[in-house]
Length: 519
Ligand code: NDP
Image (cartoon, rainbow, N blue to C red; front, top):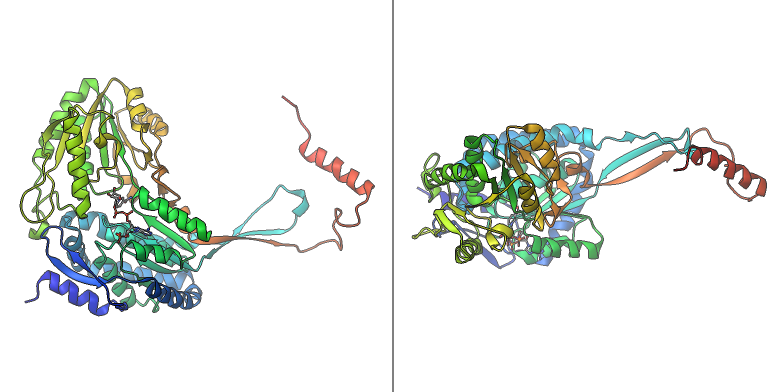
């Protein structure tokens, strides 16, 4: 009988329709170290060829209209559910994450997102009739129109092959664009599988393509597209923004984070400890909006630390191959990430931090790091200031909420954040002081599931956002249409200029804009 790995290789590569240009990339299972498949390393010429085909296919796709495209996306929603087991196995095999992490944060997101965009795209992109205060155009018909840009490039990371990579293609497609997705070289298989699903669900050929390859393939993609959606590190994000600027195409960037959690002394400590444990360790901490650091008011610090440490020590870490319910914390997907995690923990310990749980790489096959809690930490340590992206939670004692807010904002990043208090009005007031694209009161990370709300970063965490109206309008250009119906043969201000008319207009402007008190 074929192993899961062989099954994935045969099924996906037999049906992905991609061009083999010679070079290949080996895809590894991070939980076992075994090579599970190889995919083409596409060069710039291959990407250009995909782009030509995608551009040819786009007008007909746009002509499907919202109903036609929505029908295919709704079919795809059911396809994801019908093939959930296979998709989960593929995600688990290439990321090493647990079955639960794949199910909750990927399958459920995909299921929801296909339905959401199929249903809401038309509302977000419908023509808008605009009213104006400008006297010069009174009586005209004013329309704001959104139209697909044409060809969208999506470059994705390795932590969520469905949610963060493929997820951004859904609104781009629904808006009427063709899309080329460049998944991370580490995790390309899920994208290929979903491409197969789209074809089965009736998406026309070439409307969606997967460009497998490394960073160079991503760079080549930017040279071909009308807009680029990127998720990944701030360092690569800057390169993407520069390349987009050279071509004068829009770029939407979702970058790194160092999300703070604030626990006030009146918080429900049991809930705060459970949320801290789950959202710092979920997906082995490899989530852009995972809790990366906690600030706890002094009166409840000891109790919170004791609760979190006990919960983290109880977590099972290891290979997810046993299926549902066997481990809570899976593998570290990206080989260099393990070195970053070890470096941050070692740096903290060397500067005086104490390890209350975990702290070490798990010996043996695969890449695993023990779920780790650190205390006696401060902002001289990398673990409090740089993105760790691992199963670590450093906890710092603070005197009061003001100190917590100051430290939370003492970061180049500003993606997510959270504050815990029974006084929700105070929690909301503190949330408004946090320099972050999202702030949760008595919760964390959950804002990502609200597809009606924008999800994006402040400061070095990104530009633009996904989800909400902006999450689909960014894949469109805007056109202003002004229709003049009943009109005079000539407007008052047209040639020839006459002093009497000009004085009349001057008086008119004064009446319009010059009335009222001066301060
Ligand atoms: P990168 O930002 O380097 O990669 C993200 C994507 O961009 C990948 O598909 C990558 O391809 C591609 N890419 C790399 N170079 C270029 C380029 N010059 N032009 C266009 N595309 C390019 O992230 P990494 O995967 O290397 O992870 C590094 C760090 O990023 C992590 O340690 C973590 O801190 C952070 N990160 C943040 C994420 C988030 O959700 N915001 C997600 C993942 C990581 P390839 O993978 O083939 O090199």
